Amino acid sequence: MKAWCALAFLCLAYFCHSAQSCPAFCKCYARRTEVVCHEVPLTEYPTEGLPKNTTSLTIQYTNITSISEEHLSATPLLQELHLYSNHLQQLSSNLLRGVPHLHTIDLTDNKLAHLPADVFSHAPLCSLVLKNNQIEKADAEWFPDNSSLTWLDLSGNHLRKIPATFFQKLPHLENLDLSDNRLETFPADSLDLLTKLERLNLQSNKLDTLDASTFQSTRNLTHLFLARNKLSKIPQNLFQELTQVKVLGLDDNQLSHIPPGLLDQLNSLDDESLDLSANPWLCDGKVEYLWRWLQKNKKKVFLPETIVCAKPQSLSARSVMSLTESELNPQS
Ligand SMILES: *[C@@H]1O[C@H](CO)[C@@H](O)[C@H](O)[C@H]1NC(C)=O
Ligand SMILES: *[C@@H]1O[C@H](CO)[C@@H](O)[C@H](O)[C@H]1NC(C)=O
Ligand SMILES: *[C@@H]1O[C@H](CO)[C@@H](O)[C@H](O)[C@H]1NC(C)=O
Ligand SMILES: *[C@@H]1O[C@H](CO)[C@@H](O)[C@H](O)[C@H]1NC(C)=O
Image (tube, rainbow, N blue to C red):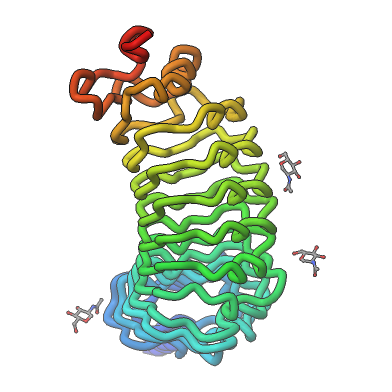
């Protein structure tokens, strides 16, 4: 009897203890100081019972709608916050004031539209993912001066333009993803301070032109994605400084010509890594530069035979590479 009581007491104590040290519906991994609340019926941030020493918190596929500075201050050692696929609409100003070690936030697939000033100030953030939200305006006020961010993903939002001041606060960026937005313009001097940038994704926007000086300071770029825009003209010097570029996507634009010399500095391209397909190439005498470049650099191009003439009618659907010199210059 005594033994039974002791056992019951132990069980109870264990139960109470574990209930206290982990929020309802969540799993706590004490040794790793990690808490995971995955696909559970939460509608509010799980404040009750979060271990104070939590360093990694994951709340995903729940119905929570907001997070505040008070919520996060309960776990001052937090380093990573994964908030994938919730219903978040609101983040409080100075959200990160109580988490001075936080370096990673993932807010993918939420319902964020407006973010307050200083929402990403106060913590030494390296990685911020805001992918697939409803953000219309990118605001420099979100960040402190000289933010430590190296990775910023704003893909899949509703951005129409980015103020030139936005990137002035982010001089340490190495990876910037702005794909799948509605960008119509990209200010010429936007990237002037981003000398460490290595990957830039602008694909699936509505850009019809880029200023010749856009990439003049981003000499360490290795990956540049410009596919699925409306680019019809490219300035001759656009890629002049991009001697480190390994991968370049220009497919699915409105290019009929590229200016002579455009690709000459791209000496680091990997094999099959330049994509020029799905453009309406005009195969008149002015396509000669592209034609000559392709003869020499065919290996660098992804599916080179898919670079085909849209016009003139007589050459329509012919691969540019396959043209003969007399077809390029019919009069001569
Ligand atoms: C979130 O709310 C919706 C509608 O109220 C409900 O159907 C769904 O089960 C909830 N999700 C979770 C993970 O509780
Ligand atoms: C974190 O705190 C919990 C109690 O809240 C404790 O059981 C656990 O051992 C602690 N983990 C570490 C690594 O200190
Ligand atoms: C900016 O931050 C970096 C480290 O993140 C630091 O080394 C540098 O001194 C800072 N620059 C200014 C102007 O504060
Ligand atoms: C560019 O890359 C080189 C080689 O990786 C590196 O040494 C250099 O510091 C980088 N430049 C900047 C401005 O980050």
